Image (cartoon, helix red, strand yellow):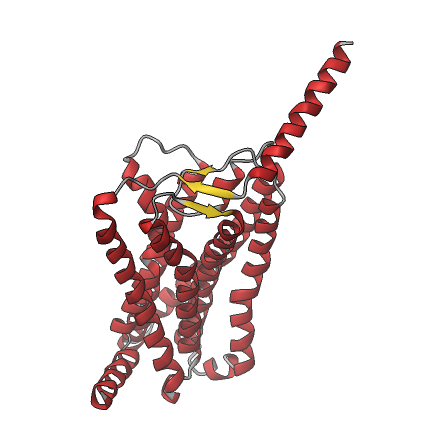
Length: 328
């Protein structure tokens, strides 16, 4: 008899869980503060930032595509990086602008999962882009005579495919596993949708999701960091034993890359630590804003850094702006 009662209770509980799972049509983003008196102000800040991101990245993509002198491997990888900045910011800023004006901070489940896919694939593509760019700099500095032979058009296309396709497949698997979860809640304590925030709402222990996400993240980060560390060790070795001209070339091309890598790593590290561990002791405002750091600052940081530090890009941007002024 007690066994029958237990089985009935278990069946009722499972039925309730199924009902709850089917009712999650919208998620509530609970990290937004009440800023009714400053709504227009915050909206304008977000809008200006998004316009700057789109403007800077599109300008540099156009400059690289239009000028034949910039049709070199390094600039092709830069163009891919700037496309990724537009892709990542498109996954966050339109939603952020809508939520800033809205009184009810809700987002539909399909749009939330789409945002998860874009945000996580953006991060993976960014890491792999930085790894491929460090490999390109290694070949240019350590093997200058063989550089053009190794970096053939076919090799460039292959490396760009490596940057984009594996992250899309890996994050696609993550998003599918999250989509298949039965959820017993709808409140996400974030400003945007992140995968681990949705996993926390599962009715049962999402062990498979956690293991898959950790393995994919570990493989992506380890593969990228291994390439970056190896290439920079080789570059440093050549710089110490090479001429002054070699050192100047290394500094001019590697400085923006290193700055971009450190900036992105800081933002991603904070998001991973906050999502996986309880960091409730810190200031609540920082806990809500800093997870978005790598999604808001990196897309503007990269074009500014590369546009200001690389003389070819800088001079071409000036020429394009002057040409536009003359036509106007």
